[in-house]
Length: 128
Image 1 (tube, rainbow, N blue to C red):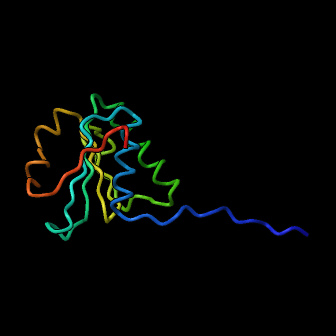
Image 2: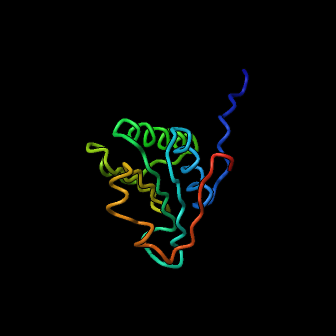
Image 3: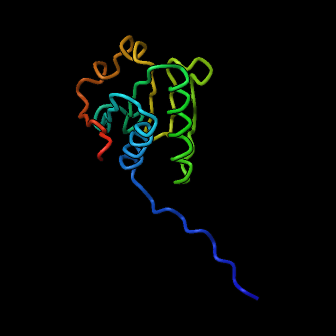
C-alpha cells in the first residue's frame, strides 16, 4: 500500500505580505491606483487597507473575484464582505487587512486616503 501525500500548505505570510498580494491580484484585473495604507499605529480595527479603483461595475466584480480566488489559494478567506450587490464599492475584510475596491467616482467621494492621511502608504505597482 502506498502512502498518500498531503498537498503542501503554502508558507505562512504576514498580514502585510497578504495585503500586498491582494493589491497585486487586483492589478491582474487592471485595477487602477492600487494603494496600501499601513494603519498599525493609527487604528485598532485592522493593520492595513488596500484601496483599488475600477472603471465599471463588471470590473469591480472581476477584481473582487480575482482577489478572493487568489487569497483562497493561500488558505485565506474573508471574514466579512460588503457591497457585492451594488458593486460601486466592495469591501473584503480579512480581519488584519481590508480590501476596498471602488468605482473611481465613488472613491473620490469617500477619499479614504485623505481620511487616513497620517498612514504610511505604498503604491502597489505591476512590477512588484
